[in-house]
Length: 505
Image 1 (cartoon, rainbow, N blue to C red):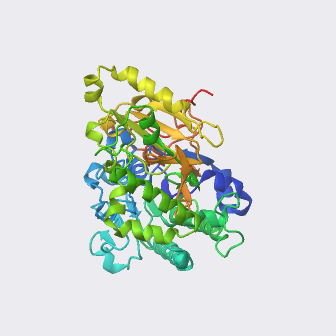
Image 2 (image 1 turned 120 degrees about the vertical axis):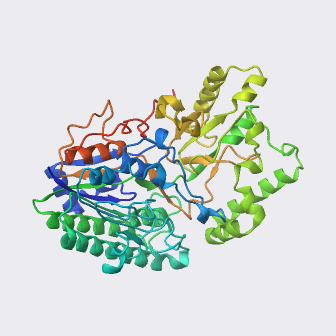
């Protein structure tokens, strides 16, 4: 059976690769050998649920890890993932249990490493929290491990150069380390190394590269950083291909795509309030309510700071001032236990999100749950941007119709939606239905539905079930197929973020 090198590149976007394929000879060479194209992510399109699905073939509706991290919360570093949910069920665990040799480097969220038939090296969720570790434990002392880990702090405008230099160094250090293990400790049946720096670079440098971004500052010293990293990863892929020779098949994957982050926010809770379905807490619907005044003051301050390009100051304030931190929570103005319907902070300020319905209050008000869910869906589909007149939502669907049935279905909001890419979910009340996204300058790149799958393998055997391209849920089954191993019962092809049925025009 074939041996396999898997290169994970967080956030690599299929459209960017295709648009620059003439500058990426190794991706072009790989596509000519096998397949080169898109790979649907999961819903919500976040790295954490997507990588866990890649590792296991378990859709989010079953594994239930839907978390995202809000850097503006002071306690965001308290975040952790329970690895027992997927430990023992990853493609490298399946291979190890079958006697195959593996080398697994920096799998996102899979920390600390565990026993495998070979080597496993990973870093903590946050690069500043703890040390890199290995299995076997003593292996970390044999070959020093470079800096690894998932998440870093935001750069400021003053530290963008250093952030770029550090990201280059982390990438090159991990690549040299990975190639050393491949050459000195191999061959392996499965070799997997995940690089996390491209996603960070696109989040923070997008507006400096994208001339169509409304916050593009004009010619600037950072506009070549994103193409620089794509060219770097093309070279890295080429060096893996050279090291592989005829002994290995190659697979390059990403967990989601990347592009311009939403420049506007659609305040879904305000829309629901105007429909009469959402009641603000603590008497905030009164004109002179302290909560209402504080909310409106925050909104005005963020708008002003954005207009003055003082986003670093706003970010610092939001992390340190208690009242501002409190305003970041949906519960500041919306009591989820005592409201008929609301938009939770399910997927952050992104096009994908959802609306939750309180069944108990439905019954108390004499409403039929399914009829009311249809009514809310139709209302959302009709929501328009007052400035342009265009519809905000691309699609709105019932959760079970989109992600399928599973043991974690109740973790999803009752309705799921995807807005057009220029919009993201906002939670302000008592203001405009659609407003400028005041955090776009800080995080100008955002996740898209299609990452990449470039591989020397023949992927014709993947059952697309009516979809145009494979999905991240297909990766683990493809790996075990390549190794000649059986699929596991937990591998189900549901829950990926394919396009939904559009709202009627």
